[in-house]
Amino acid sequence: MSRVYNFSAGPAVLPEEVLKEAQADLLDYKGCGMSVMEMSHRSKMFDEIIKEAEADLRKLMNIPDNYKVLFLQGGGSQQFAMVPMNLMKNKKADYIITGQWAKKAYQEAQIYGDAQAVASSADKTFSYIPNCADLPIREDADYVYICENNTIYGTKFAKLPNTKGKVLVADQSSMFLSEPVDVTKYGLIFAGVQKNVGPAGMVVAIVREDLITEDTLPGTPTMLKYKTHADADSLYNTPNCWCIYICGLVFKYLLKNGGLEGAKARNEEKAAVLYNYLDNSKLFKGTVEKGSRSLMNVPFIVNPDVVTDPEEKAALEAKFVKESKAAGLENLKGHRTVGGMRASIYNAMPKAGVEALVEFMKKFEAENLK
Ligand SMILES: *Cc1c(COP(=O)(O)O)cnc(C)c1O
Image 1 (cartoon, rainbow, N blue to C red):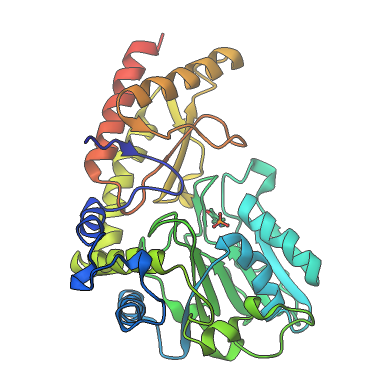
Image 2 (image 1 turned 90 degrees about the horizontal axis):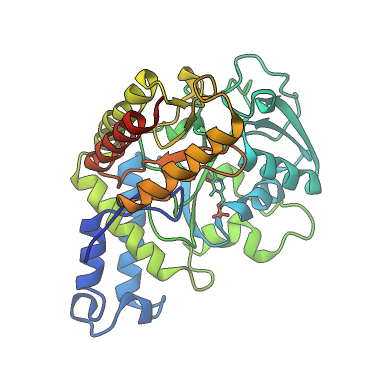
């Protein structure tokens, strides 16, 4: 067996220790003679798994009692509809457009009501987070929506927007559990877990209780009401049992390793290795403004001021992706809208992986810089 350094944006790298634990329990989960994939979601065994996962997540994030924790399916994308269906009482919501995921959420909300873009960084290919200190938030807006870490563009809100008293809704998919957050500042946080936490197929929603009501938009399906899942402790129907189990193992792993403060310290240290190199490299450059940089997703390109011929630049980037793969560094190709490369360095990417990437980049630069 040999494992690569996997820089995929998602589904993405998981802690090896957690994978080994799941492997050890695969055929016979704690003496019950079956795998977690095979047990009833109504069984006592599974009840303990889901309750412990919720309790551990509450501990990790310091989630106050007046917030519900929901384990839902449909991914991050389904939340783009669930949020307006459940929260748009006045049918008005204000969106901050910092990339493709925010834009998709904004477009989805337009199906249900009057969604307005109050800020955008589209003018510079989403390479920065706009100043959100004094936005034209509407008096009767039901909520203000952000995508807090932008997976594709590699930006992150260094400071939360001034919502002028309105409820803040945040898509934290690609930064979930990467650092401490103050849950009380949000009305609703959701995160598809396949980026930084677990396998694909589940989204965690953390919702303030007063926002969970029967008063949803007419026609809202039962399955798309937060109340349905909140009332049933995420067991209204069969949940993604396997994913809840693996996420539970990851929560325990994080608790054991210094909680979210520990995760943040490791993530800052790791990201610094890559950003420091990018800031000093001649051949490569990061695409994001310094004050808006993500700790999780790092897009970079061959510097067009150094390799001025666009075709030569593209060829060099393709060569980089190919050669890095051969060197055991996987999934470094950038998103098609940004081009170049992207290294996603989530919680479970070891520092040694980032160091190996930088060593490879140094060698590539020495060989290819004319
Ligand atoms: C990946 C991603 C999504 C979409 O998640 P799905 O689970 O594929 O629907 C939404 N928001 C962000 C920030 C993402 O990175």
